[in-house]
Image (cartoon, rainbow, N blue to C red; front, side, top):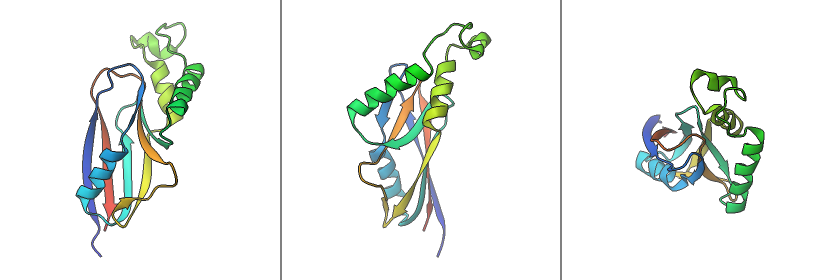
Length: 142
Protein backbone atom coordinates (compact mmCIF):
# COMPACT_ATOMS: atom_id res chain seq x y z
CA UNK A 1 0.00 0.00 0.00
CA UNK A 2 1.61 3.23 -1.22
CA UNK A 3 0.10 6.54 -0.14
CA UNK A 4 -0.14 9.05 -3.01
CA UNK A 5 -0.99 12.74 -3.14
CA UNK A 6 -2.28 14.91 -5.95
CA UNK A 7 -2.63 18.70 -5.94
CA UNK A 8 -4.73 20.80 -8.29
CA UNK A 9 -5.65 24.48 -8.26
CA UNK A 10 -8.87 25.97 -9.60
CA UNK A 11 -8.91 29.62 -10.59
CA UNK A 12 -12.16 31.33 -9.74
CA UNK A 13 -13.16 34.64 -11.29
CA UNK A 14 -16.62 35.72 -10.16
CA UNK A 15 -17.57 38.86 -12.12
CA UNK A 16 -19.68 40.30 -9.28
CA UNK A 17 -18.99 41.09 -5.63
CA UNK A 18 -20.85 37.99 -4.43
CA UNK A 19 -21.84 34.71 -5.98
CA UNK A 20 -21.90 30.93 -5.69
CA UNK A 21 -20.37 28.55 -8.22
CA UNK A 22 -20.83 24.79 -8.37
CA UNK A 23 -17.30 23.33 -8.59
CA UNK A 24 -18.24 19.67 -8.18
CA UNK A 25 -17.27 18.69 -11.74
CA UNK A 26 -13.89 20.42 -11.43
CA UNK A 27 -13.16 18.56 -8.19
CA UNK A 28 -14.34 15.26 -9.72
CA UNK A 29 -11.94 15.85 -12.63
CA UNK A 30 -9.06 16.34 -10.18
CA UNK A 31 -9.97 13.08 -8.42
CA UNK A 32 -9.97 11.21 -11.76
CA UNK A 33 -6.60 12.74 -12.69
CA UNK A 34 -5.15 11.71 -9.32
CA UNK A 35 -5.99 8.03 -9.98
CA UNK A 36 -6.48 7.65 -6.22
CA UNK A 37 -9.10 4.98 -5.50
CA UNK A 38 -9.45 5.25 -1.71
CA UNK A 39 -8.66 8.36 0.30
CA UNK A 40 -9.70 11.89 1.08
CA UNK A 41 -10.19 15.04 -0.98
CA UNK A 42 -9.68 18.45 0.63
CA UNK A 43 -11.13 21.46 -1.17
CA UNK A 44 -9.95 24.77 0.30
CA UNK A 45 -10.71 28.40 -0.52
CA UNK A 46 -7.30 30.06 -0.50
CA UNK A 47 -8.64 33.56 0.15
CA UNK A 48 -10.03 35.06 3.35
CA UNK A 49 -13.11 36.47 1.65
CA UNK A 50 -14.19 33.26 -0.11
CA UNK A 51 -15.67 29.96 1.02
CA UNK A 52 -16.05 26.33 0.01
CA UNK A 53 -19.08 24.44 1.29
CA UNK A 54 -21.28 21.44 0.54
CA UNK A 55 -25.00 21.72 0.01
CA UNK A 56 -27.84 21.22 -2.48
CA UNK A 57 -27.65 22.72 -5.99
CA UNK A 58 -30.98 24.52 -5.78
CA UNK A 59 -31.29 28.15 -6.89
CA UNK A 60 -33.89 29.05 -4.25
CA UNK A 61 -31.55 27.84 -1.52
CA UNK A 62 -28.67 29.88 -2.98
CA UNK A 63 -30.93 32.94 -2.99
CA UNK A 64 -31.78 32.23 0.66
CA UNK A 65 -28.05 31.99 1.50
CA UNK A 66 -27.47 35.38 -0.15
CA UNK A 67 -30.30 37.03 1.75
CA UNK A 68 -29.44 35.40 5.08
CA UNK A 69 -25.75 36.31 4.82
CA UNK A 70 -26.60 39.90 3.89
CA UNK A 71 -28.84 40.13 6.97
CA UNK A 72 -26.06 38.73 9.19
CA UNK A 73 -23.29 40.90 7.75
CA UNK A 74 -24.61 43.59 5.43
CA UNK A 75 -22.30 45.17 2.88
CA UNK A 76 -21.48 48.60 4.24
CA UNK A 77 -18.17 50.16 3.19
CA UNK A 78 -18.40 52.74 5.97
CA UNK A 79 -15.71 52.68 8.64
CA UNK A 80 -18.42 53.66 11.11
CA UNK A 81 -20.12 50.30 10.60
CA UNK A 82 -17.06 47.97 10.61
CA UNK A 83 -13.74 48.63 12.31
CA UNK A 84 -11.93 46.61 9.61
CA UNK A 85 -12.98 49.18 7.02
CA UNK A 86 -10.99 51.83 8.92
CA UNK A 87 -7.88 50.26 7.36
CA UNK A 88 -8.96 51.51 3.94
CA UNK A 89 -10.74 48.27 3.03
CA UNK A 90 -14.44 47.98 2.25
CA UNK A 91 -14.84 44.22 2.67
CA UNK A 92 -15.37 43.55 6.38
CA UNK A 93 -18.71 41.93 5.55
CA UNK A 94 -16.95 39.49 3.19
CA UNK A 95 -14.66 38.27 5.99
CA UNK A 96 -17.64 37.68 8.26
CA UNK A 97 -19.63 35.87 5.57
CA UNK A 98 -16.68 33.58 4.88
CA UNK A 99 -16.42 32.77 8.57
CA UNK A 100 -20.04 31.61 8.61
CA UNK A 101 -19.88 29.59 5.35
CA UNK A 102 -16.54 27.93 6.08
CA UNK A 103 -13.07 27.63 4.63
CA UNK A 104 -12.95 24.08 3.29
CA UNK A 105 -14.60 20.71 2.93
CA UNK A 106 -13.26 17.16 3.04
CA UNK A 107 -14.95 14.44 1.00
CA UNK A 108 -14.16 10.73 1.08
CA UNK A 109 -12.89 9.14 -2.13
CA UNK A 110 -14.29 5.63 -2.58
CA UNK A 111 -13.59 3.48 -5.63
CA UNK A 112 -12.06 6.51 -7.38
CA UNK A 113 -15.08 8.80 -6.90
CA UNK A 114 -16.23 11.45 -4.47
CA UNK A 115 -18.45 9.70 -1.93
CA UNK A 116 -21.35 12.11 -1.42
CA UNK A 117 -24.64 11.83 0.37
CA UNK A 118 -27.87 12.47 -1.54
CA UNK A 119 -27.99 15.92 -3.17
CA UNK A 120 -24.54 16.95 -1.92
CA UNK A 121 -22.39 19.07 -4.21
CA UNK A 122 -19.38 21.34 -3.67
CA UNK A 123 -19.71 25.10 -4.03
CA UNK A 124 -17.37 28.05 -4.09
CA UNK A 125 -18.79 31.10 -2.33
CA UNK A 126 -17.42 34.51 -3.29
CA UNK A 127 -18.01 37.49 -1.01
CA UNK A 128 -15.54 40.06 -2.42
CA UNK A 129 -15.14 39.16 -6.07
CA UNK A 130 -14.26 40.73 -9.37
CA UNK A 131 -10.73 39.34 -9.33
CA UNK A 132 -9.07 35.96 -9.73
CA UNK A 133 -8.81 33.74 -6.65
CA UNK A 134 -7.62 30.16 -6.18
CA UNK A 135 -9.10 27.02 -4.70
CA UNK A 136 -6.81 24.17 -3.61
CA UNK A 137 -7.85 20.59 -4.31
CA UNK A 138 -5.64 18.08 -2.46
CA UNK A 139 -6.33 14.37 -2.82
CA UNK A 140 -4.48 11.84 -0.66
CA UNK A 141 -4.86 8.10 -0.54
CA UNK A 142 -4.03 4.97 -2.45
